[in-house]
Image (cartoon, rainbow, N blue to C red):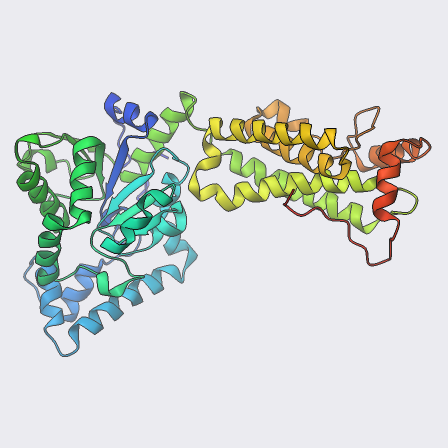
Length: 438
């Protein structure tokens, strides 16, 4: 990720503090994210929202973000127009996959880090929700869901999906600061700052949000000010910020997450996200072979083909679940996959005892797909795509499968009788498919 191009110019190498790595392993790491990791990053658009409003008001002198927004809102229907401009900016970014890709680079890098389950942000966008599967906590009423989700994002300045909650003007900032002193959002924020390891990412020295947060910490925590880490490209920040318990890491925010991820992979706490590419590839391959089998199937003469179809359904459903839940990071936790395999091993034993061979085939496929996620490259190459419960040799190709089916059809065993019972009412429009339910 590190080169001399414009996109990577701030990817400075750094030493990862032991406290950060230890906190990540123990699921005690909190991210506090500013606009620099999202839509206001200079690599997203050539102009930020502040500059856009400043130009529209024809103002040359710099002022605080909130003061500028207040000035804009002082116009007729100003608040409504401001919300419209915020929404239009997000809509524009999201309408181009390349631009949205730049705006969400950080979020996509973060998603596999299942151990980071709490994020705090001043950003209005919904990228943590969409790309990291985080449940938004925006208002005090939302706190009932705090412990009901695997990952949450505390949005202290509101959300574009709840326009009444957006904090933008001086008046909004004052009201926000007042609320943080008295409501559950403020008490939760204090608790997180006091008990977790907190990393600020996407802020700079002149960032009004950053100043407000530090002022809040100093006033509320007083003599118990926590040590905080700040990941920033502003190499003067630590010298200029009047906060003693601060360590600045001078590098790009996305690059920082990438390095943290690499360290966790090397120590066995995280699966390499590259497995996603392997899973997409194998999913496509098995899907193609499955569809080809369905097209040329002969249920009457080869009823035991249903076992292979059920087995492949199990594979496909396991991979589909990975794809659907990829943004949660769950399937990048090695112990999680091992636990799921163990639970399916138990199910397999129960269904085998009940002689439910159709379901057994499905579970075998599901388990093999899970094992594939943990396998090394050599083992992945040997992944079994075909299956028969009574096969006497390895089935590498569709021809191997069909040849073996013809052999076992001459044996009137329980597998053959079970399969014939399932397809006995076969019609030309019959589709044999195992749903993802047992």
